[in-house]
Image 1 (cartoon, one colour):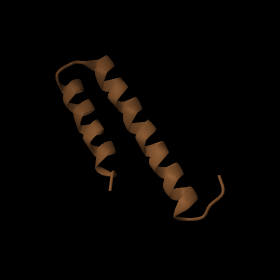
Image 2: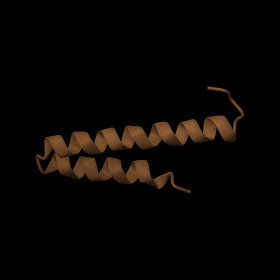
Image 3: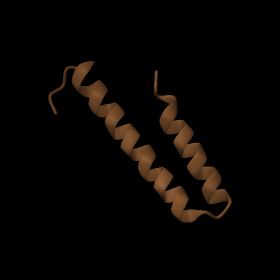
Image 4: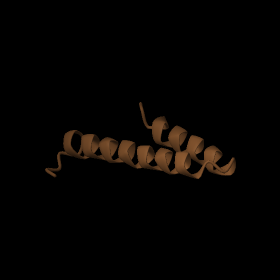
Length: 52
């Protein structure tokens, strides 16, 4: 349901880098990676029954 969030933050980061806001783009990249890590952690532990 919330899988659009990494795509949205990556798109915002791409637009920021396009307009030469490099630091803000890197912050959005960090947020994107953080969301993907949380999403994978949740789905890997609850839906796939993998112990991490």
